[in-house]
Length: 303
Image 1 (cartoon, helix red, strand yellow):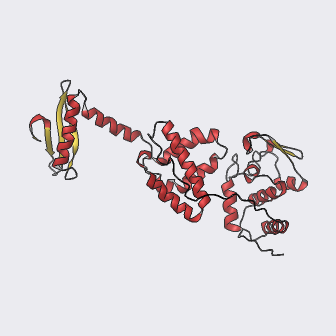
Image 2 (tube, helix red, strand yellow; image 1 turned 180 degrees about the vertical axis):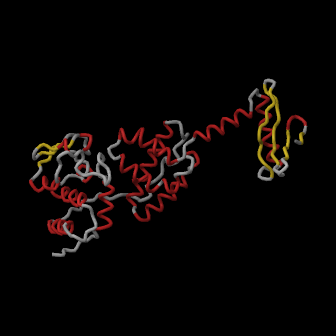
């Protein structure tokens, strides 16, 4: 140890490592506060930190205790991937119908790039770069992703994890979205139906039947893939309010074609299940990805 007056010290280890220290006494106990290692912390920087610490001591504050609390707080701060899990479990899953889509989108687009960073270290620019990448291939998806992340960060502010939401006021990266009024023509529906029956179509039977059921019932894909056996009574399908867009219970008459598309529902829970899962419905994302990968539009009628 080499010490100046009033506690400013440098510790030199046999290995040659040099560490700046403040050596002081609190309540009769000798304490050391690490001011940084040389040469990463210069003499001038070390003296500045020393001066700041002495000012705190002059106010009756233990600077080492404050530094230790900062380190503990840093350890307690979650990385983004862990906070996403917390957000989905505590907020999204109990309150949002689309929680699975939100979880899949965040874990697909955000976690691989920013998942290992502390949530408090994530800057607006970090998210902007991710959104720009997504917008380059899917503008509407980029808008959705911004909405998901911005809401999650607002929740982080409510949970006292963040002081401010870094995405507040950010404009949609995908630009303004136009309302879509496009409907399939009768001929396009026939062509799609034939395409779903092709032997060379690399798509599971469940997804084929789910898409056909959308066509037969004119119900939303998200409602179709979440059909539960308990909702079927003869030729009637009762969609509970917690699954509909307007929050109201809705009854749908099932034709014989629709019933045949449900398949054997005896002993089942969800009619269309996630592969390898016994009690979890297929995701809308799985259906959308299957359509994008295996049904090139416009479809050609193979006759």
